[in-house]
Length: 325
Image (cartoon, rainbow, N blue to C red; front, side, top):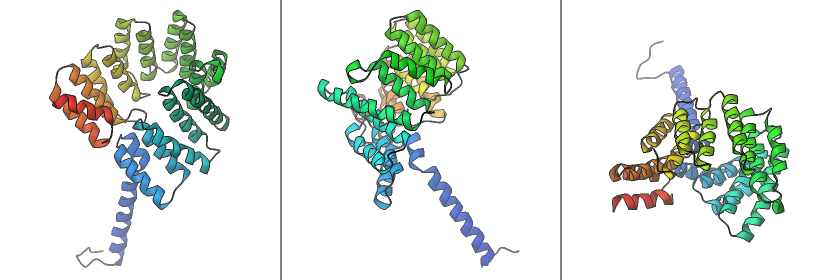
């Protein structure tokens, strides 16, 4: 068949199919999930609001809640998470996210408000586990709640230990992480370190487990060993890309090895970025590192990059003011 400017019927069908395919691929690439994973929260919010206006669904409300979660906008996100559950009450993931956002608000609330919110956190996490018993993420969040919360709102080390046993067949490394956290709470640092090292073996040297060991060394003020663990994390298998950002954050908070912090963040940007380490927050963190190094121009550029993705993100706004005054 000869293709000419006077396109015949088969050619028109062919090009129309290509156009539809490219449109579908573009839409897939720009889905709210992908936008959140890429840290493009402004675009995600706009897309989600349009979807809610056109055809509201439980999934859309859950994603809207998670977009607000990225921005630390707990009050804005909670109604969206609650709406998702109202529309689909038997979805364990939706209960998990509502528990998480309740927890973030509780961490910043006054005593009485925090106690009430803590009970809501427990209820949501327990419901998430009930609905999704094979979710190691839900069980890990529940175990951490049990470990950190006082008994009056349902906390308890024995409950956390029971969850660690149930996590073991689902994710052995995270089971040992929970056991390590329990040992730390009991001030048994030798056992805690052993559990974190067993987690490294169970994860085949994954970045998450090295981060957790570094965090332990930070807690017990063994900073030289913390540095060594973070250097190992730098070249570890990237089972959890957010570990790179969290590792850089530890270095910033302890005023240590800013060059390593920069490398960790650069590796993150070059990796598959994830929702639990929003890219705009990583750029803001890199701006803070550059500020510490005295490079205000580079810091300002990172803050501007963060604000291009999330224009209301207050830490980046404040950082840009510092870097440009």
